Image 1 (cartoon, rainbow, N blue to C red):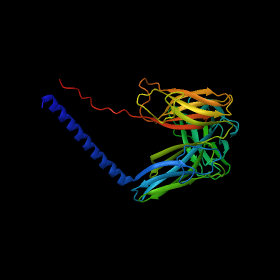
Image 2: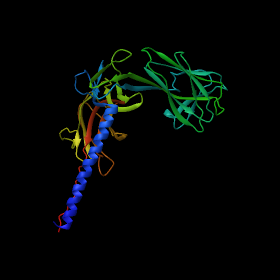
Image 3: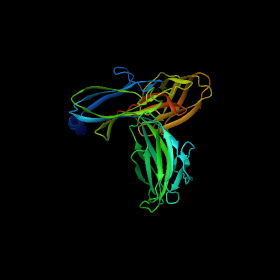
Image 4: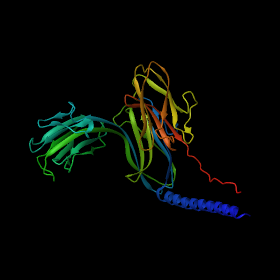
Length: 381
């Protein structure tokens, strides 16, 4: 055997042995993790415990099921949380009732570039109130060098104190209350005369977030099986339109499985049959070859005369593409989606959203396959 060929064969054998050893180590690590933490697979949403996987649910949906398989849990506690859309009200809006002493301040980093501000030392116990209906409410506020201490209450319950002192203007957010009943609630913010560590007494309120929470409980699982959790609107009636996120946590705070899903808004007009393709008139596809730079989002529509819809492509961490189109009457629309990288879409999972008035009315998951690189073996001369 020629020397070059001997070296090549030895290198190939070493590579194979390395792959085998790495695979064995990985298998042991995976086995260890499975033993310690258990395994959850096949997390999906459906209209019933034995129904098909569903991402987009129709308007007036009353019940949605969280379904997943689990094994080797050994009594581990898992928190299953299903959070829904956030509805907001700006603090400067006229629906928010303010006592004297509140002014509207301008700051580029605030939502809408405005927030309201009152100083307890100047206007003692200045208050603002907002009425809402949601399962939870959080408050976005502004901390600053003149920041003071705010007292926040929901329905006159136990007050929460919020320190708004900071060396420079900073945006912050805090969950104020959750697990609220299906009725109207009132949040009250009061600027206290007491000063903070900054020596100030000013309170800056930016926005209230009213959040829908369909489920948030902890379950203990042992051995293996299939779990089906039925979700309903805690306030009664249909599940509100919007985006929802189902998250399974190890313990209370460590997310391990996530699934996004949506409920249609139910307004006039509808997007149907969204599919992805390699060409504007090509067949539907959910898998594309490595290096693909342009794909096409194709959908049918009806009753959308003059409506503007947005097409968004989401990767794992960010929105990659966002563009709009005006629809006329009814028909089929094909829109090209091009990745800004010359090398094309990186190999991973993607989701295409068609949004109407800010609500998802069409959604499709797809992926770009990974390239398989094999060692190039040159002929010996």
